[in-house]
Length: 84
Image (cartoon, rainbow, N blue to C red; front, side):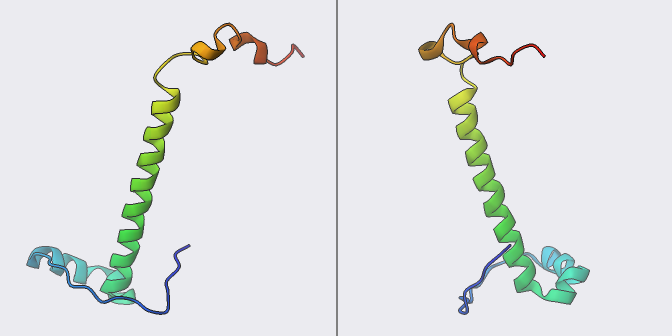
């Protein structure tokens, strides 16, 4: 869910004419307006970037070495579930 303060800052962006025409032809843009659609696109862009950063940190922390690492070498089988 997106949250917006009661004050929004107006900004100026530059788009080429073809991109602007395609944006303006979109039904969602016509329904909600350019600003709403571009705000949502910016939120999605930042959300994906955060997810990529988190995924990268997980890969760095857990993907570099197999098993549990040197600190816990030999303990890999100790956490297994008992036979049912």
